[in-house]
Image (cartoon, rainbow, N blue to C red):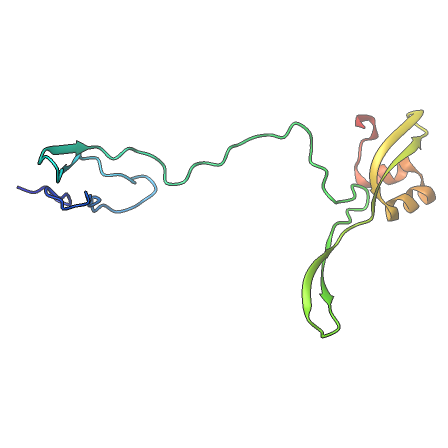
Length: 145
């Protein structure tokens, strides 16, 4: 007597036929036990498919400090995708990064130095318009830094 979707006798090596069920996100495993016979001793072995997820969930972690991205917080400049063109006109993709610099700038309103990572374009803008005006336009709070 055979159960639907299960094999009772297997040959060498031990083969298991998975139960025929519709695969959906809510029902991944068959609820019934499956039986198979060992080729060595002829004993019936029962097993229950363990409800393991097919893909392990990615670990959710929060970094302790924000990652230093290659983006200027004042101007919003970021890397540009471009082609590197060889003499034979062979084009290869490359990234043109922003010229970011770590700078200590005197903040007049706070009466202290503020260490910032900004682009050279933002540095020129700060020299022209002042740190408070550029930070206010970019929406950056200098008291946190």
